[in-house]
Length: 331
Image (cartoon, rainbow, N blue to C red; front, top):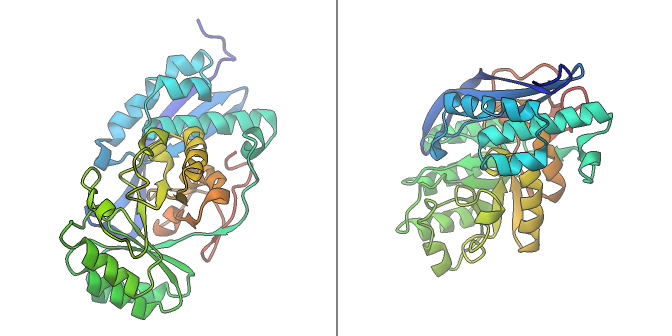
């Protein structure tokens, strides 16, 4: 029988409307569906948020069930280290990992980065995402965001040369990174990379489907290429160096901040540049990822900027400048 002082675990599905819609090569959505884990003990509650990703076979219901399946273990004193072995890397483990760290920070009165021996995050520039659409629609959306220093452009295959040219015309001063979300093929890869290089794109993310990206080894890449769907945790880094120059670290893929930090260290040691990325979610999902920004060449934590509203007390965004979380909010 557990003591009344033992930790307790609760979780729920939440839905957050997106401002307009968010479109990538795999489709569009009008809301962000997240799962929130809460671990409570001694009058304090630690929170973590994740986004189940259909690309990896995850659903909100299955993710919620996976979190709640750890109730007994949490009540028995499960810590973050034990959690890494108790669950595979997935969105559910991310929510629980971040909740446990948040509770640990609140109970100790120390910031999460101090507990982890990491540098305190500083305000930094986040990318702002332009959804996939026609060249005309993307040019119009880009024009409204042309004051932002870093734009992430969603592309989708045929016609991408025209899209990126239209985007560059609308934002002549912004640094551009591109995310193809696995939509290119070996046939149009070099043409699309050349189109991106021609307008000064800095980096292209996941141009080919994961597992079908051997062509990246055979060509001379005219700009940096970043792995997203092809990389998940430290175990997936092996063999990527010949195909990719950078890796996108997302907490939902690594299964939490604990593994994400270890993966960032390993990626740096292997010569990769780092992007810290996110799904469309609230500030509660972005806050832990701020601990990765000191090691990142690119920060893409604009999830809350794409929502119709964010959580109360969430991260402060000043244009494209994102600030670390307040202690009362997370960590």
